[in-house]
Length: 400
Image (cartoon, rainbow, N blue to C red; front, side):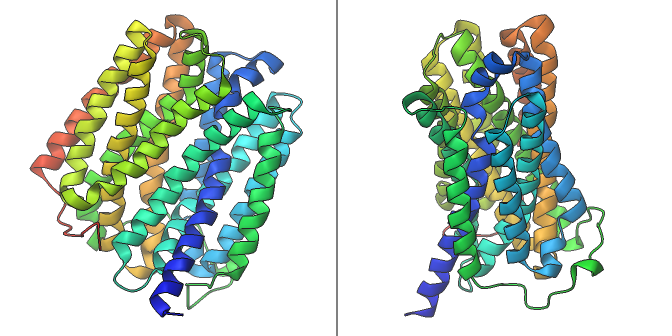
């Protein structure tokens, strides 16, 4: 068998493992209305439960973003799958709100271990010269997995028995399969160190990365902020404002945003890395306008269009950002640098979500969402102008 084929096969399998882990992090999304009925908590609590996941991710990225550079990718990823399994068990055992907080925290720890390490691992499994293509495999696995989670949970909740249990039981089986695949893949870190030698490292950027990191981080923050608010409040908006009670539809609308992100990543090829960032910001601005219209006039088709546009804009911006940052990173610092980019991205997921949750009580979902949209529109416009004035210096080609 050709060596290049073997390496692309390993790269694809690594991406599949990545997707399985990330699918577990969005499984609860279409189920939150059911949990609200069962446990009787408020809309603010929904956003806090969602944000607990993001804080778990950020904590791991800050404290252990560099661990896989030292001890190896596979050990860290197996640990991440263990946290994913523990999260599923928490949701299967949930008898109160505390179980949901714990399950989301464990899910965040799992994603935190995976984001930097799995992205670097997938890229390293690819043949030499295939960095940009492997970057697409990694980001597509990340976003595609995030999209599969709500779609799977929504379909099972609507058309199968035990809506609050079956999705997590299925995910446990998928995690077991992913662990079996991971054990058969090679390790890519050649010089490994004992875990006892690893110390938390304050986020720091090598000089070669600093010029591209700031604009990449700005674009990532905006794209993930839109994702965070969209995935946390759209099921409630569908149920309360649009009277859509079908959980499969709720899961599909959320999934569309993540799948559109994969399509947006594919579009980086024709546009190039440097141009994809400001273009992604422009598409995100259009998505915010569509979301404002959906909230203002309670129109389902505008919500769907905003999901598609927001996902495409996020995909354009994020793949461009990740390609530029990964290309500029030294090999022995790559996972650490990628983890730093994800810290910024997950700050975008968590902080605006909590803000919307706090405003929903006194103002209502529509006005809270419009305030969020206005803030993000200012930020994304500023980012686009900045990126046009100070474009990335990377000349990476997305199609290589």
